[in-house]
Image 1 (cartoon, rainbow, N blue to C red):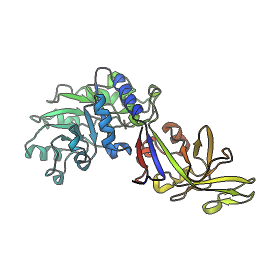
Image 2: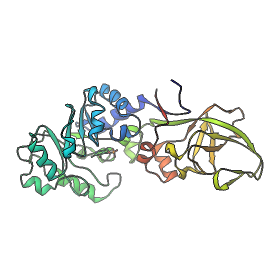
Image 3: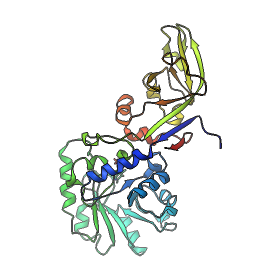
Image 4: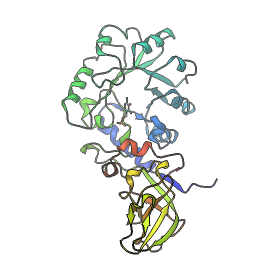
Length: 341
Ligand SMILES: *Cc1c(COP(=O)(O)O)cnc(C)c1O
């Protein structure tokens, strides 16, 4: 197989270390893993294999197609978006729905009401049934593994966190659920009061840091790209579409096989950075669909075919680009080879 001129270096040790850290931060609660959107872009199968070996037992996807793609791995998968009529036929044995609506609860009961999870809305007004419907008996008789809710602002210090926690805690013992689960990555950092029986980190597994308590989280994803051409640009020469960069002096430029079609978006124009060893190589001019230019005077030997790494530490890169840490990794496209080390 010929390799692509762009690859994601994925640090499997860092992934596992991040999961262990989040598990330890979860106190006595079990620690699962959100692996929707193909493991946040890293490759869900490879993530599952590594985390299952480390002891992770609970995995979360958004849709049934994602659960089907993991059916042969033998791990337990919860499907966060629940069940539509169209989902009822082809459900893998290892997966169960997270029921979110009265209609989904009815559909699940009519199909026999096997083991399921249930999402309760405690104030985010995204997915989930109302706590009053739980009190009203909507879930009576259902076989529930995990009752869950989701925090709207866990990456901020706002009173809503505690309000949601209190509303959720009030549901303890009100259903047949074996376990309760509230915290995502940022919620884990709010303390073990938020952990209940099971936590559901996603972004922090993959190198996201949203709160000070995430300081020990390690970077997992590093994009690397090959140089297609190295050229000399004379003083006054422009680089790229719309001539947004003009060389202030004679300079050396390398053109990378990377662009916004790969998820390296135009917001990195004139702002992003690549690196060869310790040398910093700034992005100059506009990022185009498949190509990006960098200044390479700092590394005289760097030539066509050589690889450079992009600066891609998630919190810093989010601050630089205006993209969220989530967008930064889920947007990295199919043209990257995913290379685990
Ligand atoms: C995506 C998701 C998570 C993981 O969230 P992170 O912020 O990535 O840790 C947890 N729970 C639910 C319901 C989710 O949708």
